Length: 301
Image (cartoon, rainbow, N blue to C red):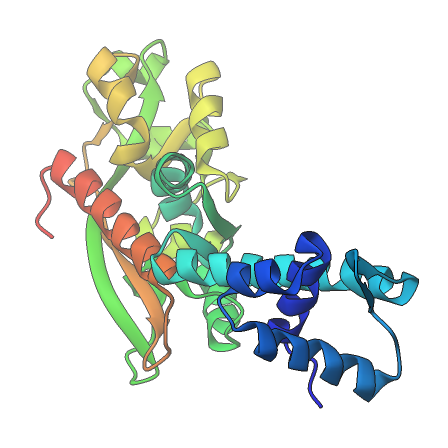
């Protein structure tokens, strides 16, 4: 005989009501059906769960031991059902995402703030790393998706790639920097100042001949460093948009005709892999945020 949740519900109902008729009514069965269930459990396991008498039904010590386990199992089952319903509605579950350093600086804080506000029961596990490290993690199914610059994504059938935005890059200094008031800057003069940006793999592909001397995957920390020192910051416009609007940061123009490049951000997932509603929701949010960054900078998606 299988000790199902339904049988445990019969035990709990009888223990609470101490009356077969009232217990049967509570759980929606007939009194004979409830009596058979209790008798089956007692007979199969060789225990006496309830004493029956003229004064009604009283629970035995063996019954009390089963009652404690039954209540716990029923509560866990109801919690599991509740969680499944929330996951099915996209309101709960776990989503694991990866972001390259530049997308993380542009999107992550706003993404997480939106999830806290709109989907507080969804667990969001985010990893910030280089695309070269994130793509193998995605291939091992350890994350649901990643957001990186398209330069690093192979053109194959394994990965489903969604273009989500475009970020214009540039050279930035604080308004008090000596270079801020010089107009077009001689590229050779940049060597006098520390250049700060992402690690070599990023800067090498995105910034051409410019070679950063301060390297970090934390673009927000580099922005803060630029605001406090005479560092020249190589990064995305979206990271300093508010600073440019306030006039606290100036974009440098080089006199050699160097044109600030742009990088397309892509959202990458494994083709054919099923995704939860929560994961799709997070991916749509990322796409919307990246589009907003692109629109704010006047770039075509």
